[in-house]
Image (cartoon, rainbow, N blue to C red; front, side, top):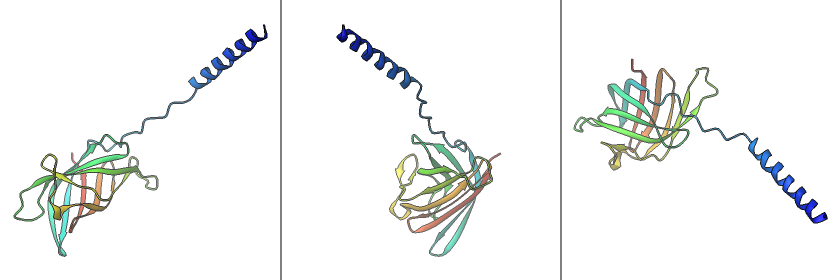
Length: 163
């Protein structure tokens, strides 16, 4: 009889434990940055050998990645030197952290180091133009400002949302 009571208590205890597990709150999915899918138009300034070159009306698109808290930047129609054709440069795996110290809703701090950019649909950029280091910037619903070191040159970009 004692054996049956002990088994009954054991079964009741395990069922209570299982029920309490159901009350645990699920871990929320990380939200994707609200700026994903936005296109900005602005000026890219390239500085090589202390000589700045400004490229006007450069479109930059923010693309979602498969990883939380990261985005891709696609700079469209970049031309690093006059002899080079205009190409689209993709900068993958840029960290996008929600800015808490800026009074702008949906602002994200962009950052990254040792990023290998790609061009023309996935071809790694040639050696003088990689890796990307010291990438820093801020993106909001209306503006994008970013700067970085790209191999031997520096690149800065300031743009506003494409209407």
